[in-house]
Image (cartoon, rainbow, N blue to C red):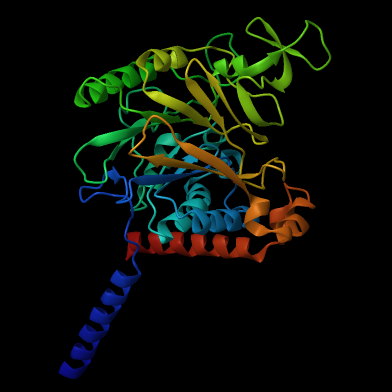
Length: 395
């Protein structure tokens, strides 16, 4: 009997050691859990936009995410909304499975991640507050709700410490841009509300004061762009073919080359209401760029009033996209020059080579996931995990 107990203890210790060795060590975090520049003064962010999938995740999307994580080796992953397709994930179980499909690959590599919500996250039966709690179950999730009473869910900020840990030298804003405008008589997408803007201004001022009176350089991440993004479009004559009028300006589906460059595959889809968000950021002087998703086939950068509009394409295959741009964005920060940043996008075709073109792009995007057995693996993994959760409740 003693021998059996001894063997069991030895086995338990061995398993514990193996688990400890296999467990990810989260990079780019200080000892107290704050984001921190690396010893070389660099900090790399991987933006993943519009994975937008259901509980049986599209294998091509998850494969692209895995390849991007391995290619970039980021210090932080930011999911910028429409992380799941809420309308296809009714109930807690299906929502948890959809979230696990995108969060598990990041956690397995020991990379911190954060997120904002998009309009499609909010189309199911599970609220954004409940979804945030699901994400927070992952040890490397650094997202939180700064003020639960504030409009939306999950608006927060993440300062980044200097490489020596002496002080905060950069800041990331994660802002819930809402879903759909429910104001009386209104239509279109939601907007960043006044209480969110007030929180931003107050927090920005606090960071400024702690930084010796100088605005702390920042990037803002949100799902939906601000209406001011149309200021980098070319104007055209009233009534011109394919033109549209936004906020009193007749526009062509073209970027103004003096203000922007990149790929404009569709009209930007900001809210119809110009909130106080952009004006507040321009006054505060801390935000270098607003990083967005939402418009799956757009990949460009433009500048207006000193703030960059950093529009990124979607990565997912369950929703619409364009093989020319579908992919992820990489943002590189340098603590030795926080006045600027470097950024580029990596397309899924670049990650996969020609194989992605033949296997996925040639198929109907909305059906392509059906032929990939790896999706069944994700489904079974989620189902088994939930069964164990249920068993714990009764055993």
